[in-house]
Image (cartoon, rainbow, N blue to C red; front, side, top):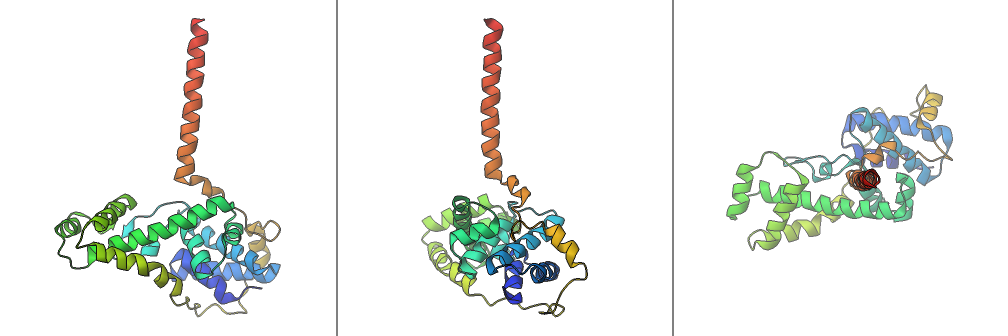
Length: 255
């Protein structure tokens, strides 16, 4: 069975808040002790409980956060991106295992991991370029004009500038080269003092029922359907169908 520290590590990497992570870790560990899952299934349960705590706070798997210039670039990732990146880079799991834990197919999972790595680098580059002294007039003016939070689109524009600016390009190259290594090798999160190997909730049966495990796996989160890319695809499809129906109705009306 997976170790408590491993469960806490994944949950902490996803939630990025010590107190909330402690709640999710206690719940996940109680469910794991009661169900005796495999190591991969245990990580799935941890993922499910981490996402549950975030949903309770109105944050869903594909919600894209703004980038805080005074914050951690990891916080610029969506919940599903943080989860996939942690499993891939810090737990060194292959895409098929990550997909099982997320409840996604392998193609979608590979795309999520790729996006997560790219957006982590962009956020880190943008934060570094805007918050460090520079001789670049464009970046200096951007630091004045922009607020303390920026969007992914703004981060992409800043990174594009860095790639073309002889003053800024060393920052881009250094951060881009270092950010994945720093993330992968960061120290593990410490366990909260109130969590121990013996931790188990009094209402474990209720927690297991609430988890709705399927053959030992946490279910795929229904709110993954909020993925903006998938919503756009559905909008395009439905729009095309509506156009065809309108055209057909007009043709029948004149025939």
